[in-house]
Image (tube, rainbow, N blue to C red; front, side):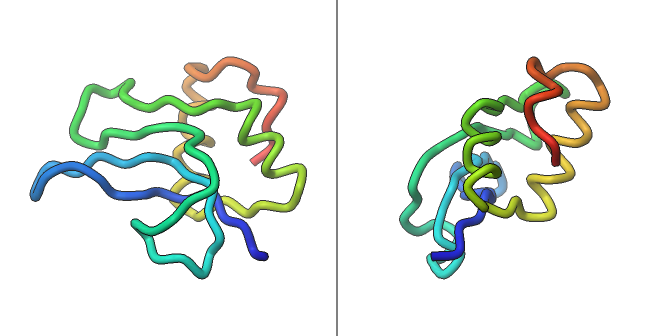
Length: 91
């Protein structure tokens, strides 16, 4: 099973809201998932992004691959110093 960490779209039309989920890459974008590890609101305030770094580190350790968007989000937030446990996740 190829596991990915990617965004799952939720919210109303023209008002997207995303959950960061761990899923099998063969499932559709908004389909089944294994675990929710964070959330992201692109229309919200600048800091409207949260992720459970310990769970992301676990899934990366067992072979999950982050999508390019999730990779960039985590990298950007780590550079801003907003995420705790920065040394635990190597993205």
